[in-house]
Image (cartoon, rainbow, N blue to C red):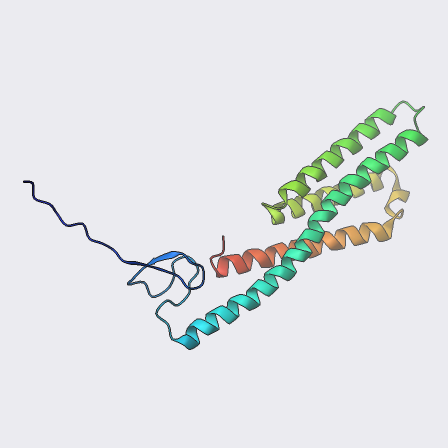
Length: 180
């Protein structure tokens, strides 16, 4: 008969906060940081701090959704502007180039809007940069365009900046609390 080496059985527990497996000797949950061997007061403090952060995350996520929706709205604006331009200037030679440019811009903003659920900060910064570049180029080509719809332009830029701030706050909270 062969010598059998006993396999060390490692007892595991479930974290009371996130239900992740943890070793019996762990003081804190390796997944969420919950004080497994802490006093009841320490555990309650951890839970109440997490609840406050979850409320903050809810607020930031709401703002982030609004900013992401702005990317979709911009796609719609580019399509709408392209169609209007087409019907007003359909007899002009360069009408196709303007309409195609607007469709390409709409597609870019649609992709940014869809991808913003995964990488919100990068998409919002890219969307804001692209929007500002388009507005500057329009102002160079046709200086009066900067004043046309100025309130809408300011609102769009404001929403995007607010979304960028929220995305940065969400990233900060996620890093501080080891949230995936």
